[in-house]
Length: 107
Image (tube, rainbow, N blue to C red; front, top):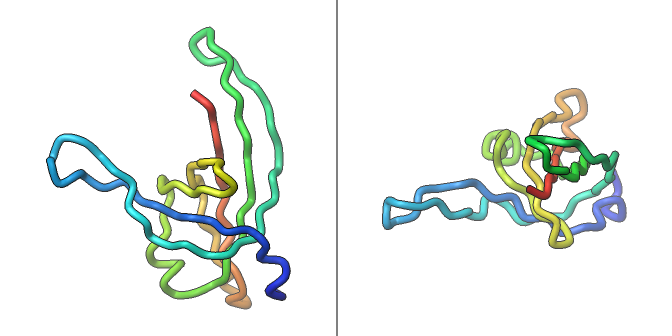
């Protein structure tokens, strides 16, 4: 994969307990370049309130570190859009990329 296809900066963060022991904060896991494709947008009704959903496919470079440290439930931020990582799919055949399936919902 050429470097030109990784044209966005993304931040990947995990939720950790704040030192005060009473709240949670987001801690940086990785800041890297990525290829981002917004797949769909739709609105659903949950508890009589509309929720806007966006789904994105985010591709980052393959590395052992990325495969070991990035997990479902972490958050990814790109262009001020915060998304939840729903799936982590490493390219085990060629070791070129890790595909992250992300969802953003405005609740």
